Length: 372
Image 1 (tube, rainbow, N blue to C red):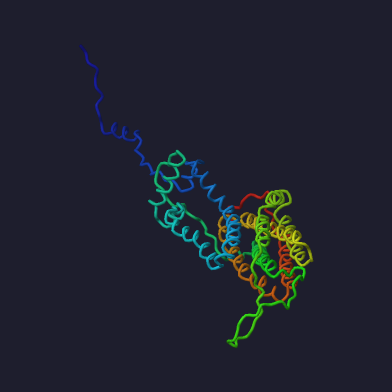
Image 2: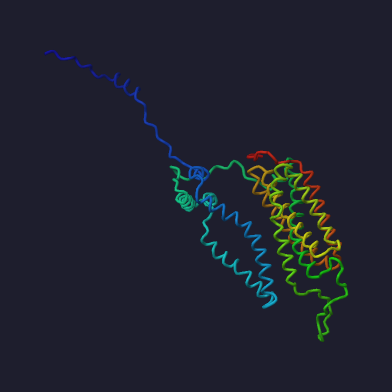
């Protein structure tokens, strides 16, 4: 039986065979960032819990204010103000100890090179959401540019930054000013001049020390009720505030509420009934809270991503300055002239209203800027 002749294998045919075969390609290892992990994990129970915790902090501020007023009405008349301070410090001590059980941010851990801690946090989130982590190795994203303080003073943002700083300082000054002024007006009961300035309690004794007037007296139950009602005002204008910033815009809405704040500071000097005083204080607390909400939203929207945290941080620093200055006006200057103190608060609010109205950028309907 004849057999089929076999083709001889030559060097040339082997070369052709090797050229026709594709070389194996080395696959690069898969990587993902924290942002990729968050997108892959998706929305779930963890985010709901986070929303409830973070959202409740704003309610924990109002509730804390109401709680300390109610606590003071019980503790001060019985065991004194020193015990009020001791009792009020207990939640803070508990919170300090609870910080040990709060996980660190995954983004922060990645930025500091602690990849394992970041993975542990992300895996915990994935388990809570009944989801899975992306495949690959967790890496830190490359940042093209970080925000610098000089960027806030760049020609493009210089005017905006300076006006925002003025507004933050003024809003904080007015916010803490109205809180302290409320206590001073109720304690001294001098809104309508119902008590003569000459009515003083002399301190000192036979020691030969200089005598000084003291207007302090215990709050009546009605005073505590006034403080509680005025504090509730901080959430009263939230629906109108939301409508205003979305329909009128951030600048116009802020300038209106700041102007109204200036007006109600002056109205505190009008001789009125107890109900009138409660109404003025209620509206003031509502307006200053609305001012804070609006400027917070505006500041977060006006700066690009690389500068946003820096802009919020510097504005918060100016906010602290306003809080430091407020007691000197609400307590020191008001001792000499109630009208002078109220006029100063009102004047600062007018300056803030003008600054808000003349802000060069309106962020209503404007997409968040990613780059400078």
